Length: 431
Image (cartoon, rainbow, N blue to C red):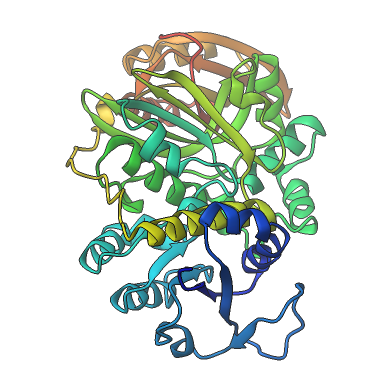
């Protein structure tokens, strides 16, 4: 029998604990699928005296060298999060001939090329299924099951915190602050929720997914990002009245004019498959030229769902070890595609205005839209807000430059008190 496969775990927080639990619970099946014994040899922790929520004898250490320099450890599983020192630990592990499995979206989004280069140089596996969408299999399907396709579009709900908040705002009428407090009380949002609510977490995942989908390197800096902090109950109400649901979406498109990757709140048709994705669930909707439309749905975070993805990668590496064949799927960014220029990026827009309540206002606003070459899909005048009236407009598909020009023109109109909000719309048909 081949020697027992030994793991070194970096981090024993939520996901690390989940890996230990699921490995113990499903050990018989995992061993059978690998064809060999496997065990967690050592776990790197910050506090050796902290009580841990798992059973079994595991060696804890607070010294990274105990793992990186242990020649008996075959696979290093990085679950620390953040860029430093996780990136340096993974690079050192590969330099020492160890395979690496990680859930680290931060490192992948900013230093993915470095990690793949190191894995190839040292002929080891580098696996990262758990870095995007928790327990939903999406990295492997993109790299294997859908690899014969030309992927032209990827739209996803990839942050459970904001999806939970928007669900509560939509279904229970909560305002932003109340929804955030509820998410924090449930443990879905951190004390500092910026990474989630500002769209940064989703942007990192969008960079990873689009790099794989479009076979070109997309970095975090290439992703245009807006969060949900400006979404109000009024926007939620208007969306429902107009037949839409507001979601924070990661949108990546491969067009003739280049790659467009962005994260922002979006009006989507209430009948779109993503509109029914509620609470902390995630979903990724993909269009390929051969497969057509397909969607992946499930829990995007959490102890056990993420542990499921981590262990799937560990099993793949262990199988590779049995065949002495590594890196069967290296970095797939073999092209250098350009980013789509702003004047080629098209979207519909929802625009909410507070205006003077007097004759001629609609005419002045319509003139501003016309001068910016922005075509109106619909306009409604809904309610009074103090001494002002509120007007809501939905545009046909226009480019970013046209919207920026329109904002300037509207702000220069005396009859416009404020532009309350502007949110992109995924039009149900080409406009």
